[in-house]
Image 1 (spheres, rainbow, N blue to C red):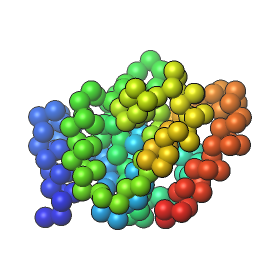
Image 2: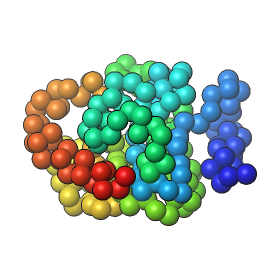
Image 3: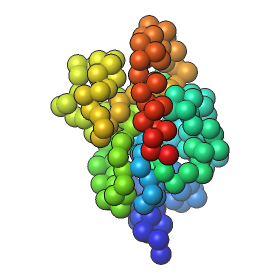
Image 4: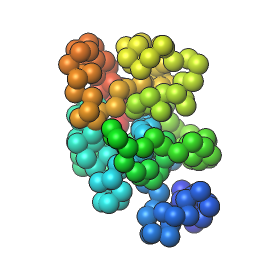
Length: 192
């Protein structure tokens, strides 16, 4: 059995995920020994869970635009791994979705990343991923962490979440599209 299929079964058998497994909902992630980039987001959204396809929504469309990759390549290449902070949709909150469950990434990410020795850059999408991976190395807020992305290269590349809810942030921070995204596109292109 391939190592990632074995890990997937372990995730499904974990009591923490029992309610999802009983409903026939598999963990939504993608890993490959050929992966050179890992995208760590928040958690799959409702539409992603329904279609069993990560980043299958407006946020995913914007993310693909940001990294300069077609939808087809995004889903077919083994050079990009997808490891959200939780592999299951956590549910709806007042604004956006409920945060990913505590302890999920801590348990599963190290196991999966250990099997992907060629990862060169981990793209950290949003505050949950940055909090976990950068911890005390983060700046005072998400905006400053993203603005200072170069401090984390080549290992990490912090991004704001591409959600439509962040359109205001994008308008207030034009430097992001002008200065950060061209560098991100170049990095992704060089690894594919």
